[in-house]
Length: 170
Image (cartoon, rainbow, N blue to C red):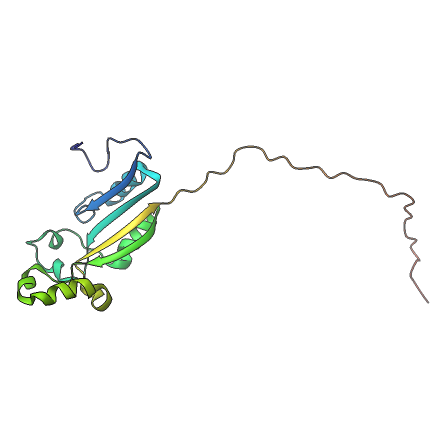
């Protein structure tokens, strides 16, 4: 099903979605915090969300003619903090798109090698950051009154109070 709606008021029930995929979303929204709050609201307690955002330092971010070159771009630390600050737990992250589109033909077979090995050798040049998060759900404190046992006092038989001079020597 498809619905055209505001990004901050999704027509979905709370905890109703198992998976959310946000691609070209965070960099183009005017309501970043509200969008993340709404995503958190509809995501099920055991649900996951995958966020794909342009990487600030990548080649793909250098041209406004491609989707990754328009809107806001993110550093690795920035996107992780943003998601954590909005009650998401980062589970996994990856970097992708190391060869910009204008170099792909020029590099030929080398382009495929760079894409496969870019995360290891050229992480700063990634075009996009992919982050998988889960919903952080904390247990509500119990409102039940906790029963506590009252101490039982049992008098000691043959209890003798110490004399004020006991134990003194002159």
